[in-house]
Amino acid sequence: MIAVGAAYLLRPAFLPAPFFLAALFAAFSACQNRPRALAHAVILFAALMAPFVIQSGIRLRAVGDFNIVSFGGFQMSPVAGLMLTPEMAEGFPERTRATARAILSAREAAEAAGTVVRTPLNSQGQRSFVSAALGYFDIYARGYDDFLHGVIDKQRQPGEGWVDFNRRLMAFSLDAARSAPLRWAAWVAGATSRLTGHMIVTNAIMLLALGALTVASLFAAVRRLEIPVCDSLGGVLLVAGAWIGATAPLTVLTTFPATRYIDTAATLLPAVPIVIALALVRGLLTSRIAAGD
Image (cartoon, rainbow, N blue to C red; front, top):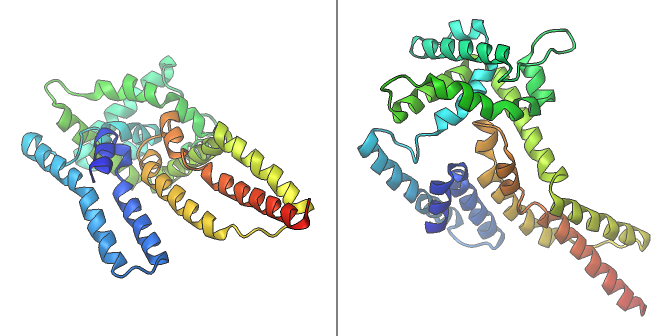
């Protein structure tokens, strides 16, 4: 509880951790046929959420905001701002229409000045957010912080407290997702593609592990070995999957996968090819001993 609470209090992107760690506990308990596994998993989840409830309760009393930090709306607002069109802005609810208009106007001015990257033309000569988010997500990733600090920062009104500013941006972001679910889904898909690709292709340990697995697999294929790896692989898959679930979802749902988020989510991923490679190596050694080589 203390370790997980410290993790998501220091880095709110870890907030899904209680759910995935409780699910991991339930999965291992089920594998071992432990009684009352589900009840124990629920108790564990409640314990892991206790720091969130305590911190958020303190903040609710102090600043009127039930959350561990007033930052999510600010961090998410570029997603909404980048997908905005004049038609979308006019269709916003009254509570966020003025914010949408102001952000759209500031974005267009920044695009004209060259400080924010404009959505590129698609194959039909149109500026399509969906096409760019799905196929060329790094265009948005590269300019995300420029948009956040060059456009969104300036939307804070004189005398507006940070908590109120963040709450206003959260309402704006959620209204944008409701107004254009296809665009938001395209963002999530593009962000997931970037996250997954970088977790593998730009992860040096992962590439080394895959290389070792390839070599071991070639030797195993030559000797026609059938190596049982499912037992050990299942446990590693559960742990690696729980870690990815605890660290990755919020980075694709509310912002873009920056390198710091990708490196964190990919920490345990190389364990999967490593455990398979080790099982193959053990099988090769065992077969050589049995053959008297």
